[in-house]
Amino acid sequence: MTEKNLSIKKNGMAVLFLSFAIYAAAICGLVIGIQKNVVLFGISLFIIGTAWMLWLGLRIIKPQEALVLTLFGKYVGTLKEPGFYFVNPFCSAVNPAARTRLRQSGDIGKESSQMAAMAAAEAAAKKISLKIMTLDNNRQKINDCLGNPIEIGIAVTWKVHDTAKAVFNVDNYKEFLSLQCDSALRNIVRIYPYDIAPNVDTTGDGIADEGSLRGSSEIVAARIRDEIQQRVQEAGLEIIEARITHLAYAPEIAAVMLQRQQASAVIDARKMIVDGAVGMVEMALEHLEESGAVTLDEERKAAMVSNLLVVLCGNHDAQPIVNTGSLY
Image (tube, rainbow, N blue to C red; front, side):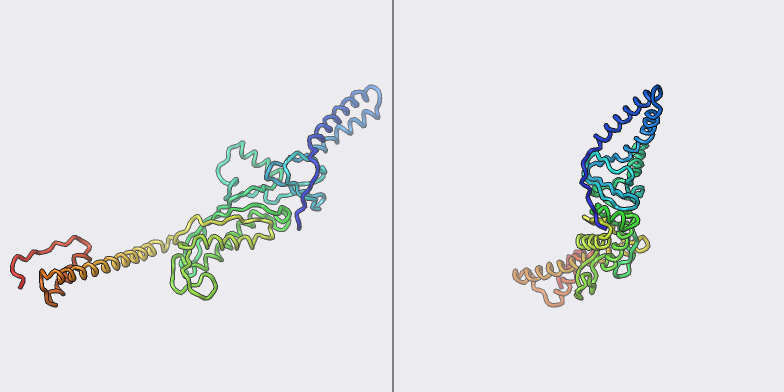
């Protein structure tokens, strides 16, 4: 199905005034026919009873809106340019997703009675919005490539690109987009680990890399966007951007993974402290030897190194015992 843009004249106002003129003439004919001419009375009565059908062909299109029209089941075309139009009164507008409400901009939040009435009127008009919208799907629990369950949520920015495909190629393009977002998210997340892991290939080139959901969020979001776009191409939708809005370990393993991260951080910190302490001990021994203030044998050097390492690597402040006697 290919979209056809209708380029008809914006003569809705002229038809509206014409219908008022027809009604005025019919009322005058009705009054005159009652007194003088039965045929004129019948014609005027018929016009009054049928002229209202002209109003069924009046269509108002606002900016960034479209109206898909069909005539007796045949696709006629799409109105996209803003204006006041008159179309065939027997044409009907088609939008299977008019009353679908998802977690997206314009569809979520508590509405007042006036806003609800406006939304219902817009849904009844079956207009398709061409504006850029953001779909915020529910968070999903997915296993990463290492089998760890994680919770992840995405926000997808999208718009309708081809109205004919969106209306006729899928049953409901909003629900179709939501389901394809869930499926694409699962496919991409299963390729990556939550954090950097050894011997994991996330690019498919057979070489291990450092890709991860937490550290490569931009790359992951781009792959999710491309995956969704490929799936919704036949639905006439354009995916502008996909962003990760929530990323965390699932509650059942969150505490264990937090302890693992804490242990890793402690090990890294201890390693840095030990490296610094060894450097300080080496520097102290070199300075003592260069100054010649104290001459230490190997046993005394070992004792000094042990004491300095205990002081420098300890968790608490050292409380040394001062020896006031002789060195030996």
